[in-house]
Length: 365
Image (cartoon, rainbow, N blue to C red):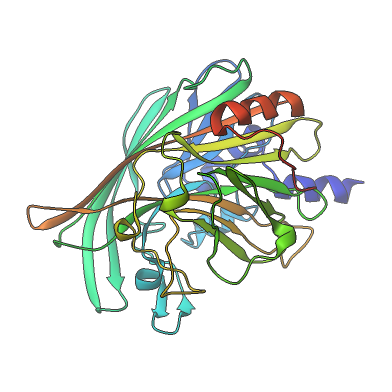
């Protein structure tokens, strides 16, 4: 029994567990919305790390069980909700032509974030940023500022929630770069026995894209006005939605629903933004599976978990607006929100419908 309990703790973090070793992970700061709702922001890696809609719940964002070791060795993979730039092919592959040698640019993540300002409900982080175009062999230097603030829910629900707004402001001192900002939230899953369901509202008859290799039919549902995707952290697949299929009348762009492990309750995470590419020409993150094919700007990633029962993460992702040329530089600014809810299954399904306009869909079980 004790071993079983230990394993559970390794996969999911209450706020108390996370803050119990805050000295070992760079002293993250706590933002408090009310008596039950809070978030934890990590100066290391410059990101929202834990999201807690109520007291004593697990973070809906995945946090690496090995986070102490990752920080100690200046690794990148701490979890949470991070900021990258794309195209992935240009900045994350040593051999971009053949998509070989994936790596994460150290000057982008974890970078060298410092907290510039903080209050009980908001903080501002900043870092220099350095990336190299593996295609052009040019190094680009710049800086990023991230403002992370707790917000009220944009739609009234009556449920326990924690809402966060990000204002990401990134500049590279090089004009006319064809790049996008990229927001990626690492999310928890219960694994194959308790998978989560990613939901993306769309226009009628969407044509979802497989970004790595073809997603099997039993992992994907295509509804009249949505696409859903199974998140069981048991095999690597990536889903992407074309801008042509996105319902831009909705501020909410992608959601995720999960029966929270060790609990009867359900969690719902939703990413919202209007600062995302509206056409194929506005986004440069081409697919590894079909680099000559169409581009998707709302994305979801399912990883694999080679060291079970330790579970890895899934992701819900937004490609953000392309950078604009300003005064001999390239500037990308985007505003986006992440809101987490916890409640009964029925309560959470009502919230899903309010945000995404999706009802009568099947959860992956």
